[in-house]
Image (cartoon, rainbow, N blue to C red; front, side):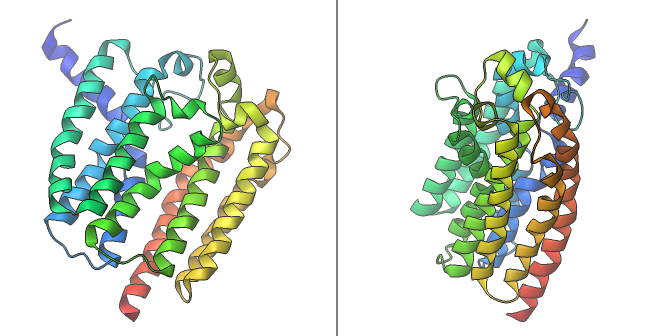
Length: 294
């Protein structure tokens, strides 16, 4: 097979491993936080949004797919919007592509901000790499796996606030805490469907340690806590707390799920992927209202 014929296949693999359906989940928090914190439509917004849209996701998911290859081979849900099984022949290319596309954006964003935003960005990037890379493998440290995964999505929002130079008031702090709890709940529930393949591959997670049912119940508590924390943000931002309700309803049926049937949680996870789009739209409308009220 020639290099010409393999190039499109390699490009398709890189695109697939970056999870296009999830791009907005990291770019949107950054852009929204930056603008709400007083940032303008400027170079920092454009560079940051582009970075958290594609290179960041290639780094996050690409590194994960390379080092989770053996587990992914045994995971029946891999091969679609939930992630591909990355061909071994493009593992090196994936790691180099993730590094080389991240570097110029990271350098530019570090130069555009100050010490605080630089620290936030470095922590976020360390969490992304440390989650999957050999040595740290934070995804195999139960409890820390959900904390680190949540950082992947809250981090861009925190960086947006820091880059805009906004003081961290009660509304911003409560929003970040609520978002963090939501992220932990989402990761924990997502781990439930992989209990069997993860155990077979020797990969530890919060779900493999405490079991499917307890993990789902923990996710329910975390989602509820996220909604409750938003009440501290005041009117009308507190309305965002209601967005936790669809997630509670979606995963409630799995609260007694046994480990040997854990893969059935995939139905709830697929709902989660599309639910994010709906709640993202509703949150956008709320943010527009908040901006107009200023």
